[in-house]
Image 1 (tube, one colour):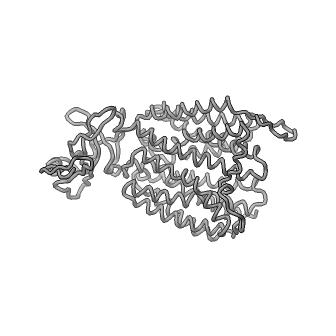
Image 2 (spheres, rainbow, N blue to C red):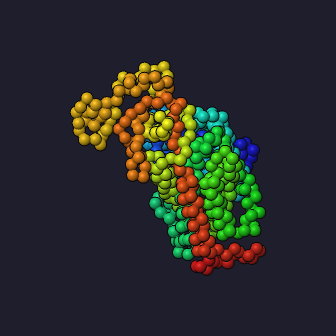
Image 3 (spheres, rainbow, N blue to C red):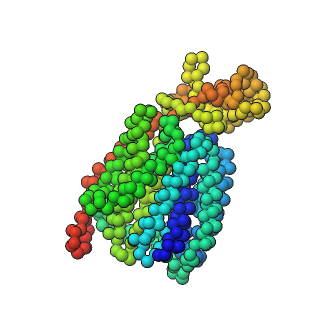
Length: 521
């Protein structure tokens, strides 16, 4: 490959992964803050990429591979995806944001395979040439995180990361039309769902060890999703700044361990490499569990750095294992099937489960033990808040914000859709009249109208009383992270132990001819 082509493909990979990195890390704190999303909704948002990963093979296999030149499909998808990301940046609440993000990821995820396809077409020896091209994607992810981190608090309290990602996506879309012409590789071939999803690889499940590997890979991706979905929010709760920049330590370690991986692989082999990856997943959550507090912040950073071992030792080893076990004619289908099981199904289940668990251990379903201070621009309607009143701790929910310099209404009607129909001076058909003018007396701006929550069952529920408090007096309840991190930590260790007992793999002898494996290998 000549230098000109190498530079063109490297630029393609650089732009490709900048788009994703720009918004992915900061999305959790942004949704939980300015958009007022619940932890469960944040989980739904992070499952968009997993859902799109399950759907994208249909598009790539049935459309892009058979009807249109790859660079043109890539350009159109990025232009459309960039427009959708810019629209998502304008969303005022989660119900507006979610469908736009899902539509963007449905455009973006197929482009991961398409950029690889363009690269492979231009290479004589992909095994030697592709890594040096693909590493630009990891470098881009790091630089994008560092760049977004320069926004400071605006990285997690504004939609600017989505704007950055959208603009880069539009630039990438235009750039794609200058890429080498890559005709559809499967023109005229019969289209089948089995072929598109690589389901021919299901025949490999007849081998017991391969079936155990697939189940283990699926299960370990469930606790993995806690990391991507909620570590940024956790770091924000610990008062850590420049979260996108700090999270890039994981990608930096990924590059390092990728370079030294051959040394480890030669000494540990497939099974031990997989187990070390699983072990580090569990250790990472243990570090998060004990890393709360300024004096222990180094434990949090170590947990992030472990990402390199977690990803390289498990996923890269998994791809190598599949390549060893699958017949040559079935290798690409087997790799696609494993990606569907792990990055698709496993992370989809994990994103939903992690959102449900974090929601279960967050106010108002549980009593918070810690709170975080939030800048004025970080508050939004639907956020939960805590403040002090007459020496007592009070908790509630933000209903409306009153910025400095703006005229506030004298009264507001607060909807009560589940209330019985009534008509009175203070209630009409389930809506409650709130005298804002009286409540705001002598309260400094900016301020917020809040409904007070009272203890109910194991958590809290709306109490029907209202108050106006200055934003400077409010703090946000923090989830009970120790209970949350204990769940994926225990889950990772249990999966690792079961996998260690059940999975069998016989390493081929060095220099010996490869022998057919027995059904029990």
